[in-house]
Image 1 (cartoon, rainbow, N blue to C red):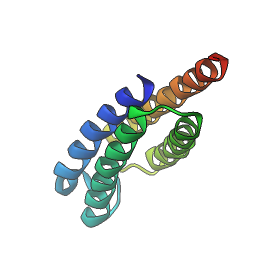
Image 2 (spheres, rainbow, N blue to C red):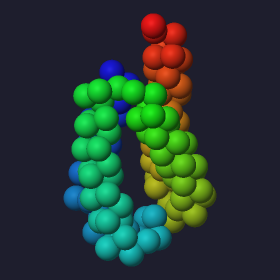
Image 3 (cartoon, one colour):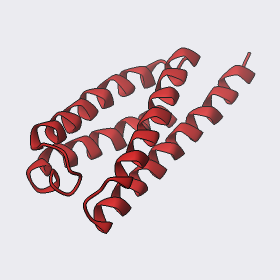
Length: 116
């Protein structure tokens, strides 16, 4: 369940980032093409996470956990360089969301390792 929720969240965020790249590029102080690329990469990542959710295994959960920790850190750093308070709050909120998904993967890993 953790991976499926994560995949759906990534899909929605990726589509939102990609579709708003022309508007948000200046707010995050990145070129529009980079913002678009980030959004599309997140959409592709969502597909991979969904595929991993079909057969949850410790290796897949660990991979997604590590990716979420790295993404939360990157978002937190990006929020510090945001061009506006709104961009800062948005990036910090998404960083907290992603960190929450990492926490859910830890719980899922614990549950998975307890099962016979």
